[in-house]
Structures are given as structure tokens and as C-alpha cells.
Amino acid sequence: MKLIQDNPYRIAGILANSSEKELQKQKSKITKYASIGKQVESELDFPFFENVDRSESSITKAFSGIEQNQDKVSHSLFWFLKANTFDETAINYLINGDKEKAVEIWDKITYGKEVTSKNFSCFNNIGTLKLLGESKQELQEGIEAKIKLIESPTFENFVHTVADQTYTIDNQKQTEKFVDDILKQIKGKYSSADTLKLFSNCNGTTQKYLSQKFTEEPLHKIESQIDSCKKKRKENKGNAYEFGLKLYTNTKDDLTLLKSILGTNDLKYKALADQLANEIMQCGIDYFNESQENNSCDNYLESSQKLTKLADSIAVGKMAKDRAKDSLATLEDMKDREINKAIAILSSIKLAYEKAISEIDAQLASMRMTMSYNQTINYSKVDKLKAECLNWDKVVEVVSDGISVNDVEIIQRCSNPSKVSEYKNLVDFLIGKLGFAQTNRVKYLAYWIKNDTLASAQLTAKSLPSWAKWAGGIAVLLLLVGLIWGEEGLEVVFSIAGILGVLFFIGWLRSL
Image: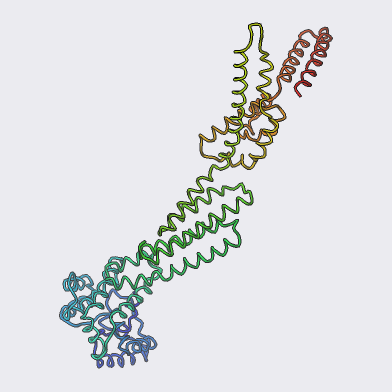
């Protein structure tokens, strides 16, 4: 850790609680050596340390950095002092390069113990060694030891050991400064979550300060993102889906961090989360409305649902939660709007047809009951009456106006199999009742046969009038006869074809 490696006391080559006389003596000595290009070695240049720079400039900077009492206290927290026999023994081990043995000695005096006037230096020293460690566990233990020392009543003893006896210090402010120093040292090395874990064993006061430190930046970032998204959405509602999705993505990590620090019950977190959720939700609403106005064929409904679900996962407050719930319910109802509308129109036509047929059958039954034994019913006329029970041209007009090509394109994406099956059956029913020209006007309803040549041919053939089907069949038969009889039979074939042609022409006229 740089605060330890480049500590002014280390460069000076003295302990943090050296007397003013010792400090001045050391300053004079190493300054003279530096002036002639030589460096003084110190027994505190422990073997596990990196090389120390004792140039004239670094020496001047080091001694000026420990002139004031506040600076002495701050730098002492990242160095060693000798205040009892345990410190003396442990430091001797460090001089000899036995770091583990020094830790063992100080650990016995501090582990599970409270800070007292007899062991405060041990807390500081083992904390310094732990801060030099490679693992997060060591770093966490070092931080815990230091903060425990600073926040203890005995910290005053530490202060008076390294600074003037008359100097007083604010424990809370010193804790905050220590935390700030540590955060600067490890910035970029650990994630926010891992950094917070390093302070997890510290008391509530430290945790509160950390919360302020760690929440200030993400709070500001999220608020800025919300404002930016709101402005873009109002200017371009057609791209509101992209804006909402980007807002969610860009704020996800910061919101997770705030949630881990503050918790969902925190009023500040709750207000921010609901504000974020409402903006994401509004992006979905505006995108949906804009797509409706522009008759967009895009999957606007699914996109709007996605944003609303994301907003629901963020929302904390009841109002935001209820709004998301209501919005999802509304979108769910809208999801099958086109197919529901089509089914309603086609079902009404089928119902009207069945009602008309039922009335004809009722009249037919009544006639049978009143007929004498020598009277008969013209069933051909009955069949024609049933076929024409509805004005099919008007029906086609109603269907064309009520179900657009765009509606059918949306219906194709419907994921409800029962509704799709019902729609197809109703379309088959309708086409089965229409003539050739009428079928051509509404055949777009049968989207499933659009690219099926055989099915399309079957649909065309099915819609032809009976006389046309007979004409086609007889034409094929005559062609076969002609091929079989050869030239001798052609005159007979043409004669028959001429007579049939006149008959079918009459049939066509009657069908109009």
C-alpha cells in the first residue's frame, strides 16, 4: 500500500512515536548524506519492503509532511510505533524479516480484545502489517484494527504518543479521513460491493459514512440518466422503447449497489427506484401509443410489456407497483386485440347465418305440417334461399372494413392456439359461403394458405359456382373423348360442346 511504502516516517527511517529530538537528529543525518549523493539505511527498512527513495527532494517532502500534529496522527496510522515490550519484540522480528512471528505476537494481544492504554500501539502495528497483505481478508482485518483503534476512548493515548500532549482530535473526523485514505488507495482494484465488504465488520458510524460516500455518486448518475431519458422520450416517442431499455441497462449496476447499501426500506432508495421504474414504464406506454398512431407492424406490444415488466422489477412503493400491475393487465388485454376483433366480426356473421337458416328450417317445418298429401316442397328453391339468406356482398364489405391486412399480419403472430384455431374455422366457414369474386376480396384472411399453391388452388376451386365446376368437368371429358376418337369424333365433340355452352351461358345468366 502506497500510504505505507511512501510514508514520511519510513522515508525518515524512524518510528511514528520518535521524540522531536530523535526526529531532528535523523533529519540532519540523512539530509547531509543525501546532499553528497548517499543514502542512509535504517533498521526499519524491513526486508519485505520495496526499496525506499531517500533523495533530497523526497526527504524534504517527508519531514515537511510530519510537522503538523494532524499530519503526524494521519501518517502514524500507516506506520509503526514502539510503546511496549510486545512492540519491541515484534519489531525486532520485522527487522530480521520474520513478518509471521511479528503478526503472531501482536495478534495475541489484540485478537478478541478491546483497545486499552496498554495495547493501543499493538492494534495500530498489526493493522499496518495487515494493510500490507496481499489478500482481501488481510486488508479487511487491517481496516478493522485501525478503525477499532480510532473509535476507542484510548485513541487519545495514541494521539498524545505521536503528537503534542495538548493536541485534541475528533475521532469521527479522523475515522472519515482514514476511510477516505483507504478508498483512494484501493480505487479501481475492487468492485463497490467488494470494497464495502472490507468495512463490513466496522461499526454503524463508519457504515453510515460509507453509505454516504458510496451512494452519492450512483444517486446522481441515476437521476441524470432519468432526466436525460425523459427529455429524449418527449422529443422522439417512436424510439421510446430503445430509450427505456438503455435507461434500465445503464442504471442496473448502480441501483443494485444502492439496494445493497441502503436496502429497499430506505426512503431515499424507494423514491429513486420508483422514479426510475415510472420513467421506464412511461417509455413503454409512449412507444405503444406512438406505434398505434403510426399503424406500426413492429412488435410494439411485446416491447411495451418488456419495459413494464422491467419497471415492475424495480418498483418498491405501492403506487409504482400498482401502476405497473395495471399497465401489464391492460397490455395483456391488448395483446390479442386484433384476433379478438376478427373473431367477434366473423362470429357475428356466422351467428346471423345460423339464425337465418334456423328461421328457414322453422318455416319449412311449419309448411310440412299444413301441406296436403299431394303437395311437395321445391328443395332446390329452399337450397337457393338458404344460400342467399344473407347479403354476402354486404358481408364481404363489413369484413373488409373491419379486418384489415395489417390486422391479419398481427394475427399471424398470435401465440394463443385456441384463438388461432377459432379464427381459422370462422374464416373457412365464411369463404365456404362466398362466390368466386367475393372470395378474392377476402382471401387475405386465410394467411396460412398464402404461400401454399395447392391450398390456394383448392380455395379458388371451392369458391367457383356449380355451373362453372360442371363446365370444367365436361370440358375435360369432351377433350378426352376427342383424343380417343380422333379426327372423326371432333365434329361430334364440337356439336355437343356448342349445345352445352348455350346451356351453361343460360345457367351463368341465372346465377347473376
